[in-house]
Image: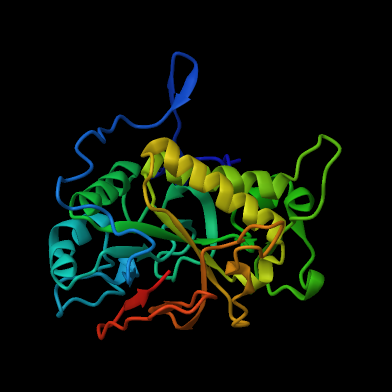
Length: 310
């Protein structure tokens, strides 16, 4: 049985989990962050006129127009060496990665998460992923992760280990599951934990602290239907980001198909906002952040790119 907290996947007689142990403690791979930022190339702040976001489906980022992306899927390594310079020259100052957490499918969008702490095997290793973020930061480009927190794949180990503890039945509270398992957000168990919430909160902190991610785009925010959890997710990931780099810009974006932007209000829930910006995804390659308060919204005429004013 695989561990749902696995942070690296390898393939040997099937997909297997990898853990690194040092002095009896679980550790990550050795990686240097000391040259992460370049003087004179700061990361774009949230209060700028616009953050220009390029929504990137890594598997389709093939540089050769003659290649069939369904045969030769892109990788983080190829993006670094073949695409990143061109995107920076276009004025892109933020990349939103379509889900890079491991899925059981090779040629999909990435919205059926199997392992929430591991980069997808087909996209690159944990070192590749860290290096991608570092190179982006060196160019003054922020990196956001598109994450799925409404449901998890039937191939996720949680389905076999503790389905009832982590999931509610299909259709609960009118939530859409798209053929997957809905996370259980509202059950406080006898041990004093909200199992699914705690799992996802740790996931957010992990990617923020271990990979220096600059924010998250929350897929299908409307169907999570738990502002208490989402507000805590925002609070804890912001704290994790500040612990890595004090004062670093960080943002939580919500994809809300209802076009309900009240979650961004300063006093949306318990006197604080739930997310920083909310918007809709008209297509798979566009995302527009529409803050509740009036703000000039810039537009970028390039496939996969949008302007986000916050």
